[in-house]
Image 1: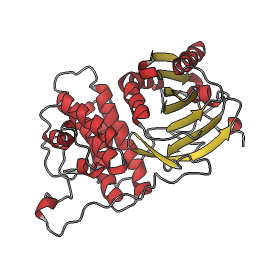
Image 2 (image 1 turned 135 degrees about the horizontal axis):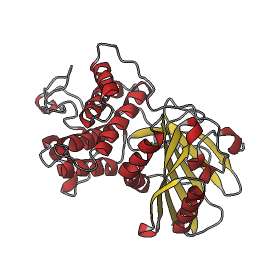
Image 3 (image 1 turned 90 degrees about the vertical axis):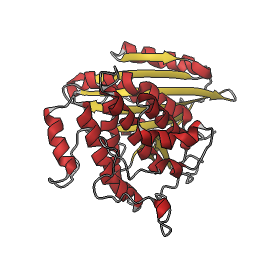
Image 4 (image 1 turned 180 degrees about the vertical axis):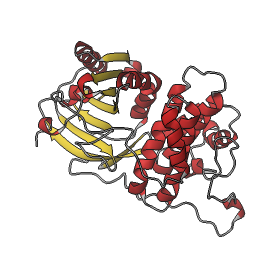
Length: 363
């Protein structure tokens, strides 16, 4: 099956997928999720409509959404929790973006945002590297965040505990007082001899298709499912999107590719960046660290008020070129500004996630 006519994506992913620029894109990060009107999520959402650049409100909104998702994850309702988790991550990352220049009083906000992202990642991911990185950022941003210090301590000592160790105290976290959140008990499991460790979400990351590619993977704490695969003149390609999204309707996507013809990873990054620039894209940065080609760029479709942040991580193994490509969409009147701000604030973080991601691309 040919991939090209089936993916209506923006120019960013077309650089690896070889697709035409679409006329429209039907997805919006601001799509409403339906908590009851009396829920704290709805209250903060209304306040955000009046103060969209308030990092504290984004932080509180992200945390409230995570609290909505947490019991669903723990009761194995991962798909139901998916929209709350993704929206929580978006607003926590927005908190980090809005405080990127470290204005006065932002240390607590940044530290708590990174800490909550680590909790979300730990609730889904079987790899501790992502959790450790987020906790390190939390402690660096706010050295007084006791929860982050305690969770990061095993990693800081060189220990590599199970991911669930990093979930300790996940139910005793709030923004201001760092006390007990709504509708949760503050009884520690250590003081309850009958308590059981939290159940693992039913995410089978070991399941593969006939080519040996994973049918699901984790990116930045989000479950991404394989929704399309194809082979063209460049080589085989696999596309993943979050749960509850599909190949025609997505807010973020990861693409894995094996190239038939070898070239240096940095050369691929340079070539892709030049292609994007010639078509009106914005190249944020490009490096060739550790033999890999790393590129962050943004593309725009003004008539549709859509932009796309793209990060490309190209690497070589045994003279074979591989690429991991992540894209995230932004929409609305401020799509250009929002996407460029996100690329500058989060591009390197997303690149690091791609670099650390444990996935074997089929030979």
